[in-house]
Length: 468
Image (cartoon, rainbow, N blue to C red):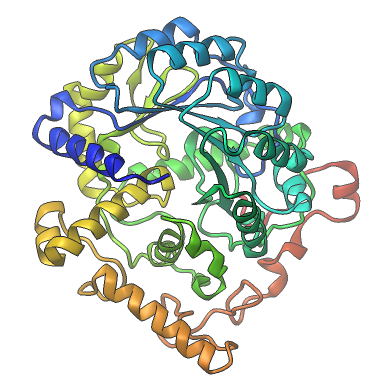
């Protein structure tokens, strides 16, 4: 799944893009071909967007002729649900013939059609979503799709590489991660773990990084009527205003509430996660970033790009800041033009606003690899100032040795300790069980604050305490 030639090719692209900013090449291009979706996810409200949009087949073929795209560019086809695009199979057929280096992303809610399409036009990889047990899947995604995912896995494993994508969020917890990891291990497939972020295009309403993992688990599934009510109440305008703050002021400082003492969940990560590459360190380092201890430039925006169904091209997957639109300019003009170069330079050097796996896993790998061979001082000189944790002198290797030692001490002492659960305020320790810090009312941060009684029975909006 993670081959040496992939890292080598991306290294070559990195050097080219540093030396020739007006002629950058893409390592990864994600095409959101439509925002039509048959899920009803809490962590992504793209399914409620109206009017529904589709990138036309001809426009997709046209943009694939861009100079910034090479045979080594991995293209991701997704939505919404990509298979709901009216020309889905036509697009798959074109990519199979002309650019076989493509991935297909799906929710698997229409398993038979997906299985048939993949067998006819096989992508390089199939990435599918599974966020917990059948019960959690229903609460989180609003549809009983768990068995459909398993059906796709059983039908296609062994025929092509499959990755299961798990999003750690307020709507599931580490028992769900354990479950999904066991499913992946049983079937011998890859797992990729991401963190819930309030991505601008997804119209999410729960502020990312301020709600603890699992704090909204078990709340009633969302319905379209819930979203319509939020629209009438102006909820989306408020969340978009908050999102806009991420492009203002000091870009090096994450914009979630830094006055809070956030729960450090390192000791709760299931050990099985370590059996799947590039996930464990990403989760552990999220704790540091969330506390504003981890600081790192964002080089990934120079070789990773997203195209939205309306043709918009944001600077990254997270921010509500667009470089341009492919219906008004060519992709090369949008991505490599002088205005784009100026924005990219500013955000590469300063932005530390998200912990998205689409971007930050690359930055982690880039820094830790250089550090391994050349040391922290040289890496800092090459890539700019960075730090992994509160002690700015600590290397990646030293940091994880410290984590392992702390966990070993906890096990030796019986496991029921608060070792490693340091918060942003010295001397205070977050609760390892309740998901809230001492002194905070449990009901304000736990799943018990969800929809109950008349609200749940009527399908009305669930009560999310972190919702703006």
